[in-house]
Amino acid sequence: QSSIRKHHLLRKSDSVLIAVSGGADSVALLCVLNEIAGAAGIKLAVANLNHRIRGKASDADEEFVRKLAARLHLPCAGERIDVPALSKSTGVSMEMAARNARYSFLLKTARRLKAAVIATAHTADDQAETVLLKLARGAGMRGLAGIPRVITMQGIRIIRPFLDLRREEIEQYLRQRGQRWREDKTNRDPAYLRNRVRHEVLPFLEKKLNQDIRQALIRTA
Image 1 (cartoon, rainbow, N blue to C red):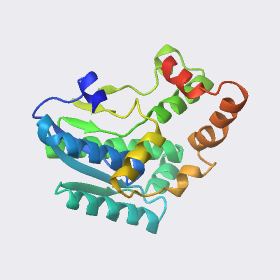
Image 2 (image 1 turned 180 degrees about the vertical axis):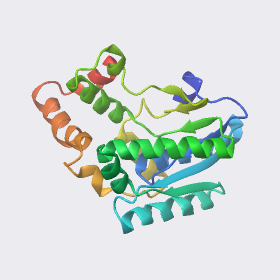
Image 3 (image 1 turned 90 degrees about the vertical axis):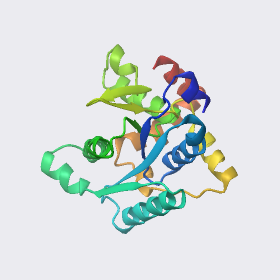
Image 4 (image 1 turned 90 degrees about the horizontal axis):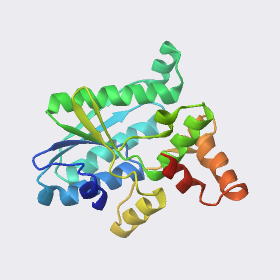
């Protein structure tokens, strides 16, 4: 909440579409925004994209999000896209195909629901991973800035209220609330480049180079 106020991410009467996958980060974002919605004067809706990457587990994620939105009395927009097939047909990586499909779905849904804002649950850990990936690819200063806190796409503001928070803080918040979330097993699959950075490269750098490497990368951003 302090980050939302500090960076003026929301305005009274904003209609906000929250991207919720069912994972800890996005479930926590939904819970936080739902808690402050009344006082902040904002209207919420939930968006969930089933990537069809994990079969029945993907369908279970979708059902989890729909039930959570219903429990909070919030509208939930969903769509199913076969990302593996999209990746194969377009020749891009699974990660890039999923990202392209996700933002296309979110922007289309925001326009349909007349939402002025899309909220995504990118964290400080995502930021550190992104900066390291950009550095490895030889990015310039713009690339090293990492994930922007606010960006406008097709006239719609996309905000990232959790960029100052670590995943461990977010999971602690959910445990304190007794709020469950879904674990995506593909988040540990080393076939995905970001997973190798998350589970292999960053822990190695923390151990061998700088135990505060994540904060150093975030400061760089």
